[in-house]
Image (cartoon, helix red, strand yellow):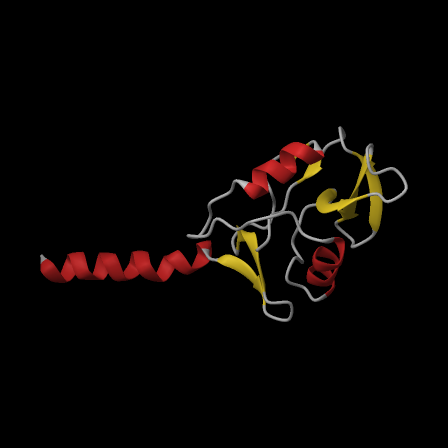
Length: 127
């Protein structure tokens, strides 16, 4: 009976690797999505997306935030975020041309664009 239980625990531990966070070793960043699924679940207005990341507790860490535009662009370019769903992803930056109304977002292809803060985009948290 001990051996069966030990074997079961070993299998569970080995399978846990599938739920590890994505790590961009080049930028020393950890993305708040697991290796099995790189798609956030829903879209948010910018302030809610920012709050979602700021208040997240994942993988034992609480220092999550929205990424800077360059961080998400480089992680898309180097393949760390190669499986993200098509759409826009919030960044921590506001649009310098209209900081009250727009925030910067990044398309899944790495292109930065301005999006109204009341619009909807995915919140992909990083630390």
